[in-house]
Length: 151
Image (cartoon, rainbow, N blue to C red; front, side, top):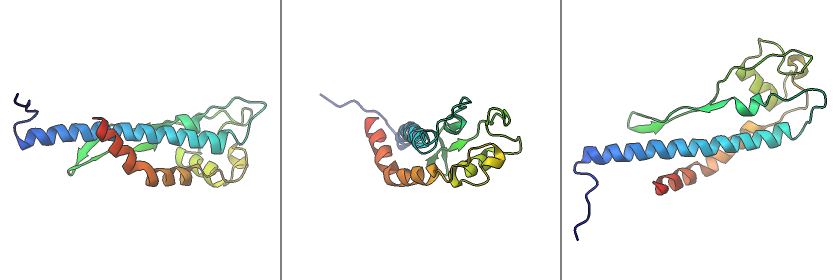
């Protein structure tokens, strides 16, 4: 019995492989994003339990990934801390002043800088970022290969 041909030209093959690579990368970044959320939970939220206010969980929930695209014969996408922060002021002790942008907020938490001044509890550095980058460096290739094999 003759085998079924999936593609008839190299252009068709390239198109199939590009689609697979985009899907595999999106699945990979979804896995990496869940790991980032887990690391933030352990290193930031589990360290300090507020008694008199509710957490916004913005450090954990404001991350997004972009859709994978082919650029210069490579597939790429991003994970970024892009959703705007809310500012409730000192009464709720929630991310304080409106001049604290997303990048500054990440720096305050990760490096423990100027925390009380910005209505973020001064607990010292809660280094979630370095742990996550190390996880990515150690696991990205394996995860991506597993996701490609699934396809």
